[in-house]
Length: 67
Image 1 (spheres, rainbow, N blue to C red):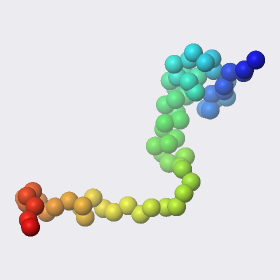
Image 2: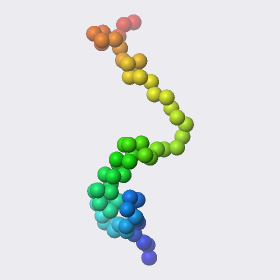
Image 3: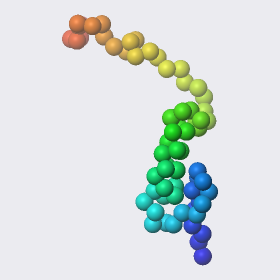
């Protein structure tokens, strides 16, 4: 017999037909999302430096490419 999974946030058992699976409720799902957005969670790996957006944009008023 397979056991039901547990909610990653509150650890209660979650039925497999729950629309918020793997979470038990929308509240736990949103709490987890908030933790990702706050930077509490992260994916391991090498840090990649981000370039500023202004370096990738063309100067104002000149949208056509020059050759």
